[in-house]
Image (cartoon, rainbow, N blue to C red; front, top):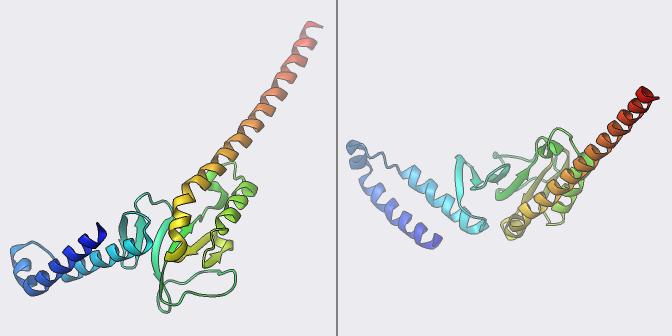
Length: 191
């Protein structure tokens, strides 16, 4: 289906280039740049195969279910990796990026850092090309982005479940301690 969309947009681009002034005068506001941008987005969407993309900026696309998932263009004069674990930087390439700027806060105010780190380590097993552990960011090429993307929600949900279990056990301990304190208080009152 994407191939058909790309083909249709390329045909539209020819018409827009030929009649851009006419479209401008009629108020249609169909611009060459807009059609070219849509073609680029469709081609990136096809290359990565992760679902419908949404244009965010000149060189960034978001995956339709979004969050901190982006596909962007990296290289000289473009976006760079802040703290690449091995010091390498991308060389003019599109990359799928998953980012957790708030770290373990994605799981709530309890900030379960150990569980978050386990999740991040599991995500690393999907072979990102670049890793920025300090900022909790992974960068995947089109060759392995889809495999990661297809498993991403399962991984995140697994760890969300672990955090909920931890919180439930903690709350249970708190309630048991509160109950013991109340029982002691009742014994003293009756005694």
